[in-house]
Length: 396
Image (cartoon, rainbow, N blue to C red; front, side):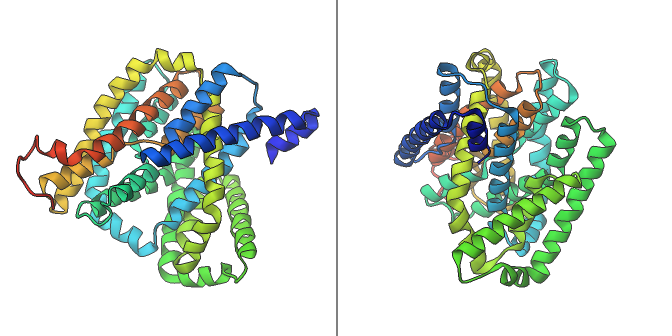
């Protein structure tokens, strides 16, 4: 929408339609490849953006990138919130908190340390820590579904870790957003505190009044539901930003408060819209990254992958062990958590939009490409890897 207004203003509508149509067809082809191979399309979309940016560079308005990115992130977080009920969230916190703390300590630290070794400033180190910390819920869920492991004994432990990571984004995103725009740490801490208070209130509403909220939004017409939900997301997101609370966090909370059949309808109605904006988001991110910069930090990305693949593996092992899983179940959990994806790019995108001078964008792109490909592969062959730890043991 914003891109179209810009195109009209510049009198180049025909070129805009041709370029966007061509990009959409390229993405459709890549999505077909992803479907056939059983892999996530995220690394393919990133590669498309990198290649298009290298072969057909074009100046893109920072305002266009910022707004389209924000809409994509709002939809991503909203759809994520729809996956949880208040009771599930509370249960995951109780059961998975020890593993969640281990996850944060082991996987946030390597990114921060790497940034320090590269000579980056504190904010850039904080952003890279977020990139290495959060696993990709969408990639992991898809892989577990493809491999028919959603009913496995280790899967609740995996999901508990992912839920805690998603909740950790509630204070993290407002904090780094305030720091990026030049606010002090005190202002960032206040914003993070407000976000956590909002999360607590949202969980309470979801537990006590979720059905009432869903009934208020629900309608027999899909059109009414779609317009109502989109209006709520944008209105609440805008109010949240005015109060220094990330619009993405607000979207997650709205998704959390919607339950039952309405949550299923919202997923069906907004899922395609989410996929469209998310695909453009990954391409836009790739367009902003210099492919030469990616090759220059490839060695660092591989080293960072090596360290964080091990730390994520141990996180999954620890979480599954706490659930009483066998060695094979622990290995499956450990390999499942390796993939990073959408939210690692979201975090790096915040730095790019703010004009950070470091190699954060290229490093994040290379890192996500490596983890998004290697994670599903290692998960697929986790049972074979488990034989290195316990030969002949039956999976549980």
